[in-house]
Structure formats: structure tokens, C-alpha cells
Image 1 (tube, one colour):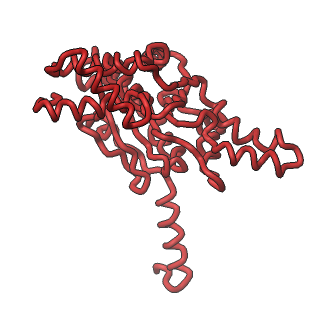
Image 2 (cartoon, rainbow, N blue to C red):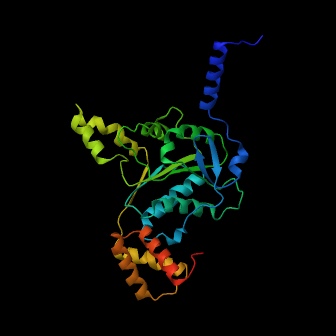
Image 3 (spheres, rainbow, N blue to C red):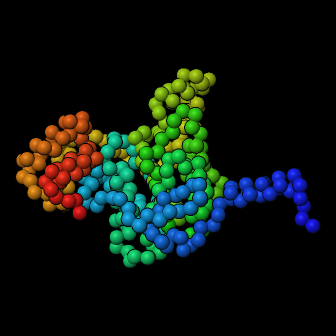
Length: 290
């Protein structure tokens, strides 16, 4: 006879809670649906992205050195060779996230569609970082290689979720799965606000040890790729590249004059500023950006 009463109800609730905590197996067919996914931590599930919003890698100007390093690292990973987790940090709007998506596309470009050798790109949101161990557990036994990407990663005061990331990247007992690589972008090299680190130093008995745990998070990334504010020449090269690619009908002198004025009103020069200017210019010219 089935057990009834308060005890059975408690056991049922415990069993349901354990089922929610356990990582559900990811069907192999799920990862065949697309080359890009968004991680839904509440599911948990991987939601296919039929078309990724990105720019062609040839349009990313002024970042040649970091571009080549990241593509080489990604290509080695795709071939099953050793590769490093990467942290792309630095100035806003200089193409950090665009480079990750473009690198993924460039690696897959020569491969046939539906090929098992094509890399998967999985975006995980900053607020879901604590669920990263579950995502890696789902991917561990999958045949395809996966590039997990977190855009604008940083941690604020009293945020302990960085410990999950730190353990997963290198320190966990299982270690990072061989078929998984982690890329992140951030405006901060050490992923922590400067005043948070300074406060730890000022109140600790041993200031250097107080911040070591937080600073060591960025050490888990084998590649640190820095992005810096661009010069006017680099900015105009970006504008020229976009204008030529989309066939905008405007003279070079007028293009440069308007681009410089646009950057002055925005107070900075960057790849994002160049793209926003091109969008405005194309609209005024009555042209599309297809």
C-alpha cells in the first residue's frame, strides 16, 4: 500500500526538488538544430538562434593583432588541439563581442552545413553565471565542440557568483570539458570594480591576500586581449570600410567630415560610433544596409 500522510508529501516534495537540481540530459538532436544557442537557465534548455546578429570579420578594423590571436586560438580548439579560455577586455564599443561572433563564423565558414565539425556558439547571460556548471555538465558528453560566450561580464559588491565561474574554468574537481571553451568580454580587466578591490585592501589584516581570490579569477583566462580607444585614423578606416562594403553613395571628403562631426557629438571614437554613424548616413541617403 502506498504511503500517505505528511511524511509522504514531504518525500514527494524532496524528490521533485532533487529532479529540478539535477541536470537533465541534452538530447543530441537538440545540438543539431543550429550553430548558435542561448542558454535558458530556468529550463534548463538551449534555445536555437537561426541567424546570429554579427558583422563580417573583414569589417572589424583597428583590432588586427587581437583578431588574429583569437581566431588562431579558436581554430586550434575547433581542431581538437589545446586552446585557452579568453577574456576580451577594455574600451567600450571597440568590437569585443563582435569579434567573438565573427571568429565563430569564420571558423565555420569553410565547413559544410550540418557538419559535426562546426563549432557551436552558446550565449550565457551574466545573471545566469551561477548555472554555468549545469551547462557544462550538459555539454560534457556531446560530440560537438562548444564555445560558451558571456558578454559584458563583471561582478559587483557582495556578488559571490564569481566563485562558480572560477571553479568551472580551472579549479573544479572535474575541470573544464575538453569540448568546451569559454570566452567573455568585459570593460574591466580584473572583472571587479576598483573601489571594491581598494576597500578589501583597506579593511583586511593582510591586504594582498584579501583581494587575491577576486583578482585570481581573471588569471583563469589564459588569454587576455586588450581593446583600447582608437585614433582618428583608425576610426575613419572603420567608416571607410563600412561605406565601401555597403556601397554608400557619398564622396570621401564629405564622408570623413560628417564622420568626424558625428564622433565629436558623441564624445568618443570607436567601432560602435562608426557603425551608428553609418546607420544614420545610410538612412539619410535612402540606402539600405543589406
